[in-house]
Image (cartoon, rainbow, N blue to C red; front, side, top):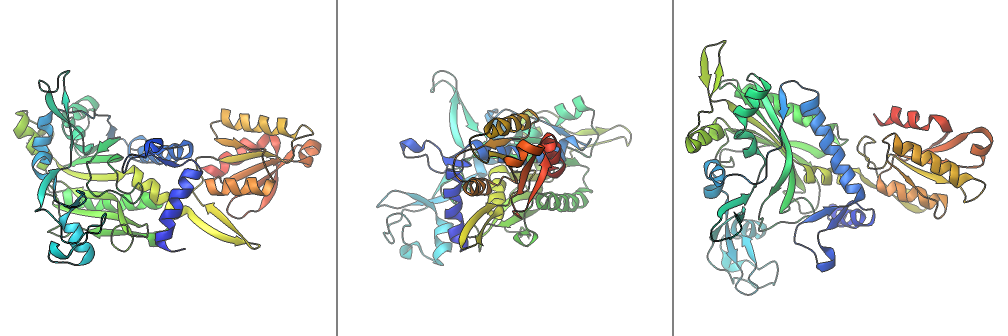
Length: 450
């Protein structure tokens, strides 16, 4: 299967097995907005839980935060988003679709727009002059739009952390260096979104801002760069499909001193040669705190009484797209195998990430097997082990359905269960089977799930 076919296959699998649906599909869908189904919401929740555990639960130098989506409009003036968060767009005079001029010219290697064909209607050279469009969604706060103040749906979660820097530092009695972590929704009015959930208008970020003393920032940047790659590998992503990409001087954001992306090879037309960013690590210097201090009139300096000095901390940012990472996990886990002339589709998800931990089946719908299987299924659910009960179809077909869903174990109640109290446990990846005592199933799974 080619890289391009893989993404199309994932879209189909994601809908069929309940990972991801197009938003408002019965009305024709909403462009580049996606809903997470029963399995998708569990997969993304587990990714977020693993991130939170590694960032907050296991450390005493990082605090959690949940800042509001709606913020004072001056926040976005101070951050530079009102002025800088724009794209130069051209409009096709024929179909009136808008595109980024630099993206269109780069795709065909053209210097002049007069030779560029519209990707939607096929007309060549029918372009307006480029105009700047802000990528933030704008709304109004107040019952009457004309009287209400302008507010924006946040394009990133980071600013909620920066404006709460002193609140968190004082309340948690933290000393620099320390970090603040947050998971939350962000919104960008992307003009050229696409590639399934890789670039969307509504997405979820997992961001941590680490506040350090100026002069130590380069060391912390390198430290966090390596830690983030190590964590990304722990999700089961193949090492040869991950890489660092440094930002050149002309690629740095207006706030950054240095930056590096962790990229995953999705394949297809995503990014360059199929590589796309899943996380960024940035040295933001003291840009954000300095700007918010200037615009708010509030002093945001950190006071170090032991050293007798005060300073605006530099910030090392780690920013992960939860949706992109979930897509990377799906793409990295997908494989097809030939088994006795048939194709077996497998999502080889790490057991800790798998939405369903076990499928539970009665071999046949008689002799009390459904009742025994139901009791195992209910017991696993009560232990917090998500399982799926299935008594429909041949046992091989039921195995295949769970392979597609990424379920690492299948448990079958059969004739031997009735005689000796053991069940058949089948492993997804090896397809090997073993007998396990019925009353030890939960412990057996917990030992192997981590």
